Image: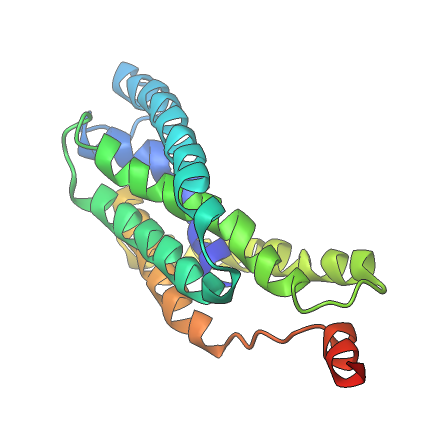
Length: 194
């Protein structure tokens, strides 16, 4: 839940945060705001490249029994990246947090499903995954509705919303400890039969 709240705020407020911090404007019609949007497009490319490299170099070689560790690591990278955006006022320095955001973005799209599907026995898997996708949609709806209040609470500061997104990710890091990974019942019954 908290990871997707953070992602929703990232998607909504990053261009404005970059515009305010780097180009010193909140006017969406200004040239500075447009430049911030263009730079965010480049940062999104960098984020995607970092995600792909991380996936190939790190997660493809990890022990499946350590999924919670890598999930926690990726979300922590995401949190640090988002919080770092709040403090940076140089467009080129933004490359560093967006590399961390890329690691987190890859992780949040892969590890929850790895943990979840490894606990299924194959029956009704499509239904379970469909229901599981609700853990993506509902937090984003909650974040969107709550943003009317949260945005005012941070003084209508878009960089402040990036800080809120990072804090939400930190809560997600802590929340990962409540995830219980089960082996599918089928696997357990096969071992018992053997």
